[in-house]
Image (cartoon, rainbow, N blue to C red; front, side, top):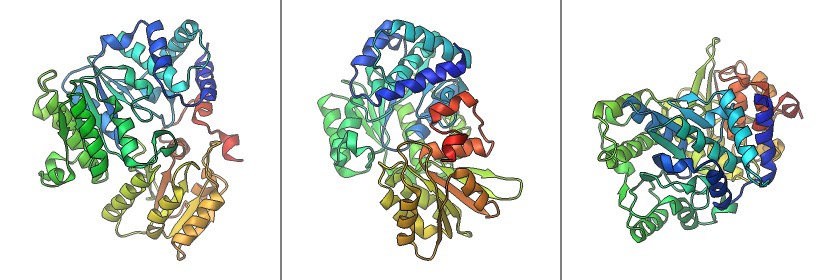
Length: 425
């Protein structure tokens, strides 16, 4: 099997969609020797900020000398991004080996991509003898494949509306799903500020006798600026950093970390595609942000209003159809001088013409055009000073590759659901 064939095999598992339940993952993990029993985890759930918080936790513990596994999703450009040890992407040969071994052991043929990838990661991290694994949920928590582990701590970043078709149509229902990662007697740390969602988390933590630590935005604002300022744009990253620090403090008795190592880990943080600023040789600035839901759009707007006050940007916007894109358009439209809507190279894309109509309705003064693809949009705005590319993480991944920031092997493109031909449709 070649790496391209391994990626195509993983891509083929997407026909089984998303599966809510732990049976498949427990079964496949057992076939792999239950590697989760030989590892220590910090399990992270929440609507937004999971990846950034995971990256911060990884950086802190790596700075303190631990061998740290990092499991996140989705990837932006390469599947290898999902499984890292000390921020080194898993090697292509290891992907091939793990796919072959788990495929040979797995007699069932309805395992989803995420279930399969979850066990691949567990097996690899155990083989690599990781001291700690930072473990991000995929969707929800209670029935998410990652929930077969018993962590040292459970972390819930925040609760907002997203994936309502799977997680529920109220914040309380969504919170209950996210809080499904809480385990009896295991400490919980959360930065959830929405009262009704927080009440659900408090109730479940109390029922499971799980000590709860809450990080509030008010407490973060009262801290010295130097203590809560990772090198990532956005005020929300200060809250994520405080959440990571609070988690480390909760676990000091099990994994001691010196204060200077916490600061060192945060200072070196890098997390692509989230308010990532790229400066081109012609002076143009391109801001990439995977603001794929209403809460994310609000965070992006706040960041633009704080950090880019002297120039009105051009937006390139594409999003999946199952998102609340009408409200996202209303939030972002007033900031833009020009808006270019594009299809996301996925069968689930929202229609670019419908997106354009929503933006025109929200800001009649802006120039709004529906472009046929991202490549066309980038050409249209090549002379503009500030371009903001946002919406789906699929779009951000394509942008990273098209801009030459993070090129992928051609075999990756099927898993990313975009290719030259797909983007030209």
